[in-house]
Image (cartoon, rainbow, N blue to C red; front, side, top):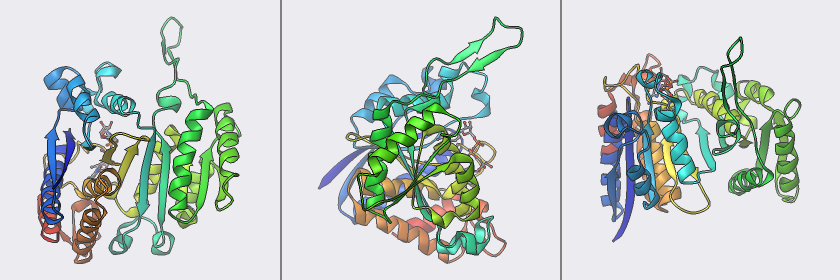
Length: 357
Ligand code: NAD
């Protein structure tokens, strides 16, 4: 029997609640498809800071490195906001991405038919949305140096550096091309090259590589226009390729097309070695501990992990179908309440989905 080692990082806020559902579903699906998943739970985020003094302890990173895949819930809480930056949970995320060299973040945004009414946008705008945001994850302004505060001035100053070299742009472009070729062969690269030198390098490099693949339909778009087009006519997009900062913002915007940020999974990958699979949303401290969080983004992340990370596509599909069946019968968590559905708690909707496996 095939056996996979998965590190589970439950993290903070709603993390433990949605992880509980994910563990159960992985257990059930692995039994059904005759493989074994050994779940190795490790401390990460604010909880790791409290217990070990660091948001990404070395032993957690070491276990992630020797795993087949990492399933992460979410981290963060306002109570950690006054800590020095390197001790905050979000810094742990950056450290994990860096340690595993996860340069490619893949965020599929697909509207589920039963949820069209839950989007804040009109049905005819969102009904055909099926796009993927391919975001560069370990470069750009989030990692660029120099960065810091200047305190010896009259008025306090702070600064960051947005920097890319062509090789970083090339490797993420190649991932976008691979994904586009498995889909509708259409890439839109998003930048701000009318203002930023780093974006001009991005545009030149991406255009140079994509022009060699004659099967691709390729376009460029400024990030401000892309934000507007995502709410005006989102179905024009197939693969959106963009840098770390722009991808962070645009993928949350795209998330809302689906009705709730509680529905969106993501995968962070490198060219070899374990990937990290996680919901797009944060730790939702406002609803943590109430058993009302939507576990579906994490379940879809577990499904992406099975498909991309562990090559268990049938099991992955089974999870997706189970989710669709439960949603189409009108069961929802509170974030997707449209007034005409039955609202269930996190654990209750989890049970319904598990029963469909
Ligand atoms: P958030 O995504 O946690 O929450 C935004 C809103 O969406 C909140 O109203 C929340 O209740 C709701 N929401 C999010 N996930 C949900 C779910 N599964 N079900 C139902 N509702 C859900 O973003 P935020 O409030 O800006 O950040 C909260 C904390 O999370 C911060 O500390 C932030 O730094 C951190 N964060 C972590 C990650 C991550 O772990 N990858 C990502 C983003 C933010």
